[in-house]
Image 1 (cartoon, rainbow, N blue to C red):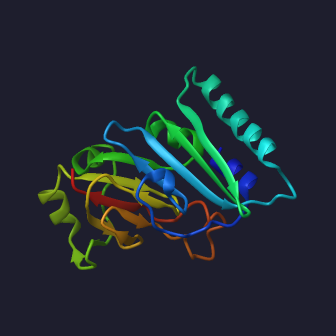
Image 2: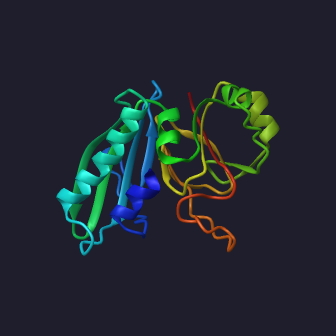
Length: 206
């Protein structure tokens, strides 16, 4: 579904990082609140030759209505859609990470490090601290099992509630509570702008 929405908004991602409130995000960003509800901000170049704002909103709502009807819920909501200076911003909310994953055909986990392990995430990747120092995944697992972690395979910004402790090396720390997962630059990844090859881990204070 999200690929569909991205096609509606335009092909190029706008990476203008820097925000306080999630809805003020200047680039595509996800945020999971303490209760597990997801807010997703999609920021894209808008190709006016294909859609106007009314048609775009109707198309997105059609996709959302289809998902909600299939799942007999109101789990996904389009909270806001704005178009300014050929840039479109859509703010969507999801009742859970499961709804986000199902709607967008992607991976998004939010929970403690211990819960992530139980869910099958092995943390077998290279980590660094928020200050760019090497970090051991074993030490993270053993010493920070109660820390919170967000795991994704999307090239997006991730905003956290509390200060970031560690990230996998395929993540760029942009601030105390903001990181960016860059697009995958591997030549064999046809969906590099939407899916990265290796999972991105963002570990932050509970």
